[in-house]
Image 1 (spheres, helix red, strand yellow):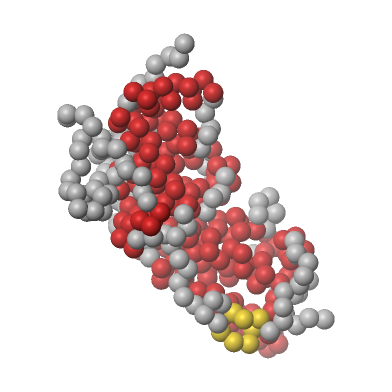
Image 2: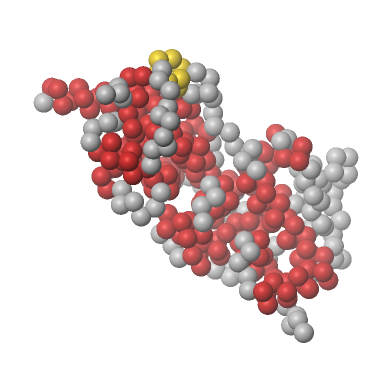
Length: 232
Length: 88
């Protein structure tokens, strides 16, 4: 009988734990892994969690806005998932369930710390339940691929997402960052699909408004300001 | 004949349009509007770029050592559980 994964991790690697034994050739299904954990093979839990690591971190980071808290929450979510695995009803994928746990942990952390950092971008721009009016900027130029790698662009996007109200940030993280469907996003958040769509619209437009003027005033290096499309 | 649509209606549907979640009739009305409205076209492009930027997946990287620390914490929890069971 194979030893659990935890006893086979021999050394730390830069990319992650290096296993002494190669992975099984056959793809093990999620259900089979859960059965193995239930039967006492705790090492199988590592295999369940491994594909979810990035998604967990992104979900927590999207809500909390910094790496350190996000990592802590991701760890807490994994530990909680391990303790509550028998409560997993398999109505969604395992990763979706753990992301839900991470979201709840992140929300509790925010509530506990009573953060006020994450105010919505501009509270005065439209009623919360009414239409959002996007700002009138000139045409957004196509962003060249190399620009996507720029640290400044990433930081600007980071700030824009962090400035969203939590309920808008959550849908953006789940739908656009994690790639969850509208239906799964609604299920994770416990809201209707209509609410997901409404919040997603507002989130995307608010981030667009934050980024449209560009990092230094426009997207083209060397130009300043932006040209209004209309005279007002 | 395509019925005109207001900018306010366009803004409400822009996210659904990006999701390809609009009826053919509404899509036609939106596309006619985009041809004649620079502001709404800019909003559409901007929102589309936001989605592409986020989906690019290059925005947030896992911190170095993330996996190691996660598995170490899980190992510690498992070890604590075993220890408690033995001492019970």
